Length: 311
Figure 1 (cartoon, rainbow, N blue to C red):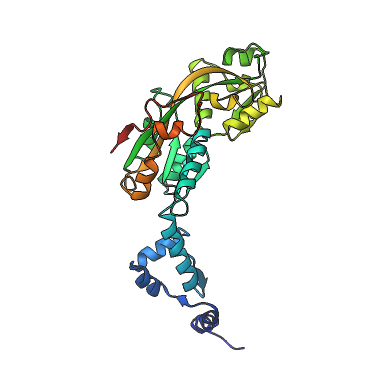
Figure 2 (figure 1 turned 60 degrees about the horizontal axis):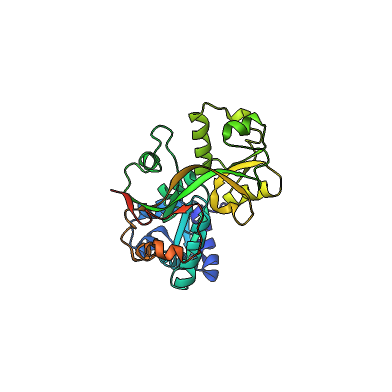
């Protein structure tokens, strides 16, 4: 029986891989990136850099590392926006990308306000749009951000105000006036995803009026966007849902306003002065936003571009 040491296996495998792609050691990669080896191990642990483990040693394919560097350099010019779903934001992102391509492109992942803020805290996005109403103070965004981003520097800029309310069929055939009627008349409700600002707003209303989610028919039926809520009502799959006024107009639905909310943009402090963020902030302007549509029902731009917080 022939015993082969792990060191020999490592050398043989490294020789094989060299024919396909040069493999860098941790020390070589640290030198290439001008980092200490401890930082390289941190990059491996976070899964941020291409690597392979052979015979107990970390190796890094040079070609893949080069591509990883190129992709990160490119991403510095682009913007990843996370957070709340918003129709006007989608239009603004599209305008920015069209006018700045190929130098810079904005990507928009509407995962919900709460998840967006948490993604921002983990550096999974450059900016976040949010509309989270605090249960205790009745204030939008700032209390939640203070809790989740504690110890981090960030700037909060108002994008716009939006009207939230009940979306119902044309003519409001069930005669709904508020959540009390939704419960009393057993109207089939369509909910939003957990962590969304609209879901938080619904929970706020229920708490304020001392109502129970268990009494709402369809409370556990949920969709991921305001337009999806409107479509459920339009196609008769739900009688009512909570959402923004804007989405009711294309479908000819009725809207019962309940609250005007603050819809804000959150930017990490270390990115605030970068050229790419400055370029995007030029689009947070009422004149430019109004150019997207001649009519913006349910939107109020009186505070657009106003800095609400900065530390």
